[in-house]
Length: 120
Image 1 (tube, one colour):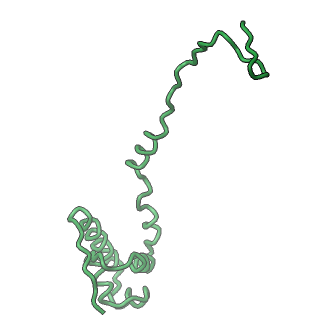
Image 2 (cartoon, rainbow, N blue to C red):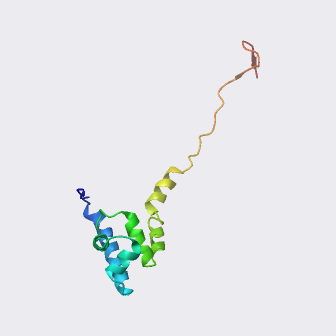
Image 3 (cartoon, rainbow, N blue to C red):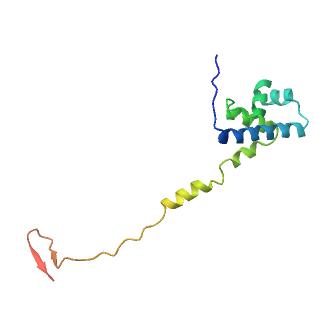
């Protein structure tokens, strides 16, 4: 089966690379070998190696499994939690526009019966 290469812009690849490096450092601080983490996360060692390199072809589920092995699975919840841009966009759409005052220009009002008009 041929794998597909996802080409990311540097702006999108950089956070993945940083995440991979942080995962690698967390593993080393805990003195876990790659084999131990891969076995506990139920992934292959090459997949773990790809995660630590920040490879975009690895599923997010594999990243979460490794974070769980390292005790860091709650960190994934922080992703996009404080969406400043999204809130600004939402708030811009929620601006309440004040309605212009209603002007009554009619001097005649209609009665309940059609064809009959009354004057004020």
